Image (cartoon, rainbow, N blue to C red):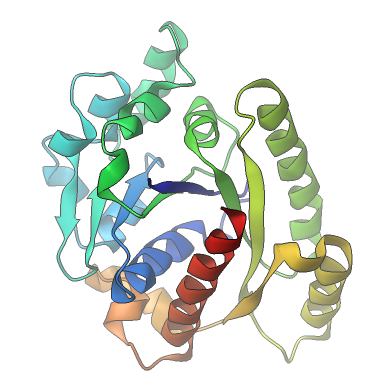
Length: 257
């Protein structure tokens, strides 16, 4: 049975897509069958996996409107070693179209049920807002991984996200829980980042992943080549941190069962 996780944070620019594609590539490297679901109309996870969003015949848009199945719409990221349910600008229109439909917040959950036995992990890259798309992700997921920078405003946004997850857990998806907080773009030379990191550990305890993703230029360069950083430069500190994180993720999931 696939474990489904949202990579979510209502704050933009915190590395959700970078986390999604590199965790997927890291999981693939350690033998986990993985599917990335790109729920962001910008399609960055699709492009970052080496798939041209402009040439997609079928996308997550078609899946949400039930005109295609996941099996029909998914594409293979050959270099990354995982499958991708891609997105493009059409997805922005799905927001409006979904409002009038029945089960509008359960569409993704229903679609993913059709491929349940085919993957070990399904990673959902959520847009940076609490939209109907994000709600579809949260309603279909077993848990949420929250990538965050160790900055003051990140703490502010985190409390909003935790409240949202509690509401979805209470009203729509009783399985939903926070799997863990991942510290990303971390620079140990900055005192404030160290202080915020300590605050996170004091407040959230073992919900904070041990792995820390350093600020790393090779991770930032990789999407322009259509590759996850883990594949683009396996020796870089960022890539090695994501492979380590993939291992920690597998170990953490084993304890949840």
